[in-house]
Length: 142
Picture 1: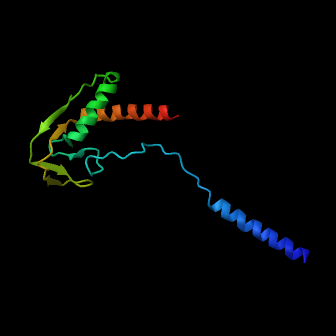
Picture 2 (picture 1 turned 90 degrees about the vertical axis):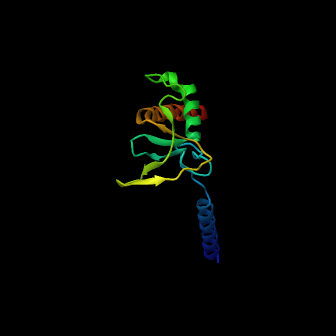
Picture 3 (picture 1 turned 135 degrees about the vertical axis):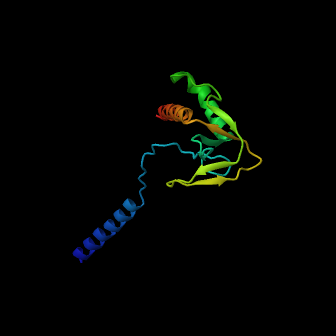
């Protein structure tokens, strides 16, 4: 009888331990921002695509983000980046490169939005400023 009672106790302990361990949440450290970069209802950060002439087609949400980062971090870059540097207003029609192909497709713009071109050089500067900003946020969170 004592053996049966010991067995039941061990079995109960094993089941309880399995339940407790399986209900424990282990989370991975996230190495990116917690918020997605949306432009309106689209998760593209305001980047529409690569235009046939080599410039990058962006919308006004991207330009606002670019100008904010230029105000905060533009002086840290060489050459210095200022608001609207490398950005020019774009008029359609637009032909955007289809990802992973050599094909360009006509992009039909939303008439209620403004579109802009940014050169690859200044898009790279934007990415540099974004990296500075992201690293600064990580330091603050520590």
